[in-house]
Length: 272
Image (cartoon, rainbow, N blue to C red; front, side):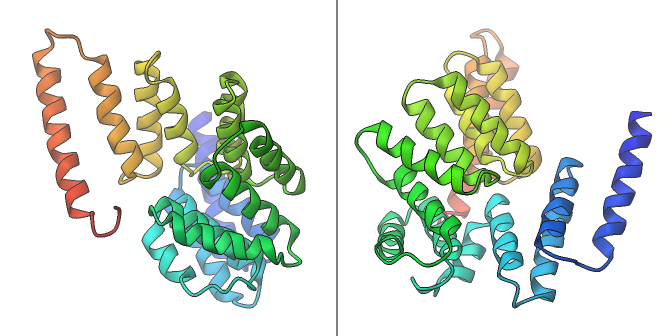
């Protein structure tokens, strides 16, 4: 019955995806349904097709770019957002900065965020996201005010998975690991295709629960097989589970590290 239900849900979602695009709310729900069914590439394709078909619809445009960020295609997203002016929709500026940070271009990200926050646009959700990005990924110092910034942003846009992720980061840094786990899990429930909350959780529990961390990493790689964070963590988690006398496992780890080194070296022009 479970397989039949899944087959029916898959057919229904694909039929809806082949039909007319209605609006951002409809596309958001459809993409999430496809992602829940682990049809991640199809979810991304639907979001991008909707944005292409309705190029003047900013909500659909932001949805497609957000889904591209979730997929981890930072080089392509960075190219699309490269010339975004600070006066653009605040959500675009926030996504631009998030992408730059993930590509280790923090100086550029700070410049864009500071310009937006100094002269905020009318999009309150985008400005709130920009403030949270800066608080979670760029600011240093006391955790409490940074957590307050992220929490306030989440009140403005409660269904934003990025904001839930940032709140979780601040909760974890504050020492509230259990609450952080729940917050990261809620981010994944909203954005099922996003591996970053999963890899972050895996990294947090790796020292104490390497087997569970390894299971989480494998789940992240199902979402994004080439995700660099997940590939590195997979090697670290696997190493933490090996006993000294498990020669076959050590050989497997050496091959894993060799393959990882080759991949990271070949991609160094994209990922610093």
